[in-house]
Length: 154
Image (cartoon, rainbow, N blue to C red; front, side, top):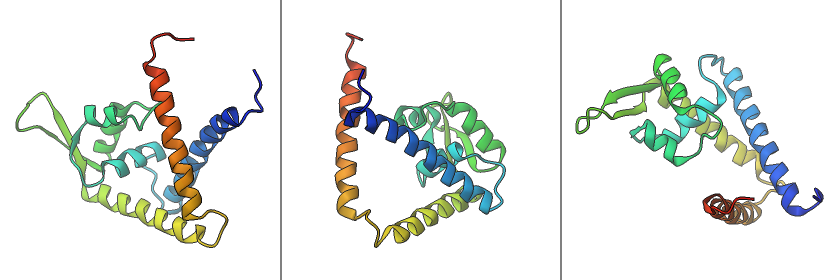
């Protein structure tokens, strides 16, 4: 296979960017002296936001590939970032929401994003270029989703 194609380069960049972003998040946690939650758990927490949801709903969102959502939720409950309660309507279902400590961390991550957006201003990274990138990534996501749903395999 020719690995010099734009498609293959995009795959490599996406993978590297994901790792770099998790490194940036880890540095932010370290800078704040936060040792009881990791970067992947922090993003799960950030994506829960102000909602209340089940572990199943978190898994369905599909943001946490390569991580065990149930394990990470358990650790975040143990470290007081999440509050876990049985659903009033379905006793088998467990719902999670951010605790006050979790909300504080979500706000800190949000502040980091805002700080990054300010730092990006004036660089080669413009809103237009980010919008173009987002559109391309959405198209690639749809393409890959279609490939994953295709039963023909390789």
